[in-house]
Length: 421
Image (cartoon, rainbow, N blue to C red; front, side, top):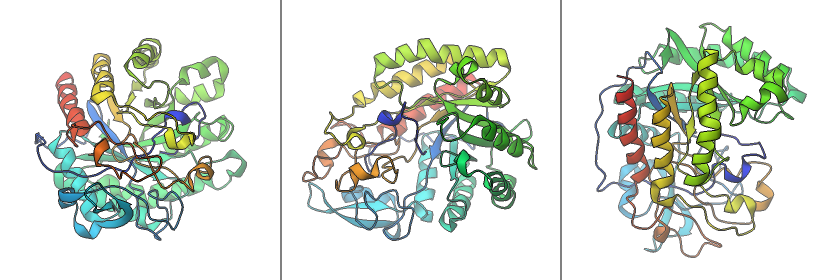
């Protein structure tokens, strides 16, 4: 997910490279997901934008052409096929080289969907980045997602990430989106794993109102109406900023577009960073959002995050981020279930560094490190990260199961499913 709003920049999906671990995780094998409806689902955002050095669009890189790290030590590499991994220049405490994976390797996508099945995660909203629509590696990834979702009985739908779109260069945007939808996305919709609701294929448009200085309301409306009228007619989820309700009075032209969506999904990465601030957010914003969408006849799909760190983004050596031994993530899961939303969006499944962003790259180019992102898949503990990196990587708390966050999400996914039975 591209993050451009200064309101959420400080806590956006930032920066530790994860790992894949086997071992003591308790497996919950779930039955096949019914992709004919969206309600009651727990879905995670899926980026799939990590490549080997030199292959382009490489979100592992702090500076293009350099080798990043760390990722997968020791017996952890057994979870990913060897052909999907490559060495970095970072040395782990056991003196082995840290490894990273490439997202568009079939074995990586397959492994991710197997974990979803094992932990009762219903599936993903796979990002389709505007600006990368002609990148063949992303088209390859979409097909890999389809195959893996069908194999493991999971579900998926496409989410257009529109944050790169600018109103000052808008003339070709709608034709490009419609062409991509018709030629690349519609064929996926025949898959038994592609999500539908009310007989219509699900499609998310993310980025409406996120940066109003970049994408104007009239152009949001143009995109919305063009895609909503496309064939087949999609069931539209709108990804909006967390305080979207303020636009009713402050930016009514945006608000009019929001109210035409089938589902509103507020992007709530940023306005809270611990259990206390989340409780305040829940009382002041989440409850209001749910009540307003109910009155307006719109479905509500809140987002949750396990937490992250903005230390590298700030570039000033701020204190490390904290996931509070999972209590922060669990507090969100508990309260969200009280709301019984239409579906739950997890940010994110595989979100590690986003060092390509133009607003932060100058501060990161010379710093060979990354910190904890909001990924839910398995992650190194702090004492397993490379000790010599300056000022240091951020892992999850020492002593935690590497798969803890995925397991936690799975346990609450089961409870959420029961609410909708």
